[in-house]
Image (cartoon, rainbow, N blue to C red):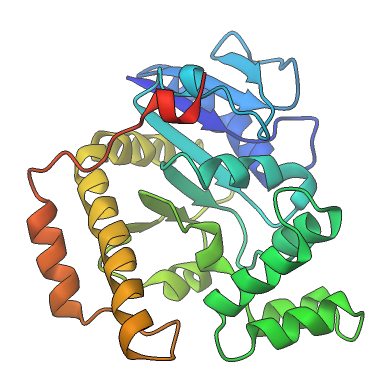
Length: 269
């Protein structure tokens, strides 16, 4: 199995960097790992190929040589902005290292990297329909802090819009994503003095479940698209969701159909 692993690396002071340092050597016993990052070298690169990339012009052909993509996301735009940008276009397993992602999205918007302020406000309105836009505008105008913003609107779902499956480390994040039958979520707590073997084994199990995750992802995309069209016709509520029965029927219809595919020619080289 070939795995694309997107994460910051040491010496970056990011939680995902330290987890990468621990877990990649364990995964490398069972799979071929290609680490995509912005650090050009790594002291453990004997365990994996380390590649740099520009998320503004992703090397899709190289990405598509792997069967699985694992994206590590945290709340710091400087470490995770490029990872999020690629994950938005390239479905994979998303590992969440924080309970809120407002600093990620506001950081990108204020830097005008991958998001401008209008994009951010639309995203906030979609994922926090009652107050997202108003609070986002208040933050951008300097009226409230990003911490106050995060307490009211975590933007967790914005971080996993295109995920095939999600790994979370806290009960808070797990609870925030629970209840969505079309988004598989696995809770893998990080324990002190843990050798990482169980964590690596769980990631490999998830990688082997990819065909099932792809079908669920296809159903979620169909549900979102069909639901959006229905609500454009029938309601003013942009967050109204498809009835669970319809979502389940879409999932059943997606079984056995090759709805999930990457088109290299459409993406470019």
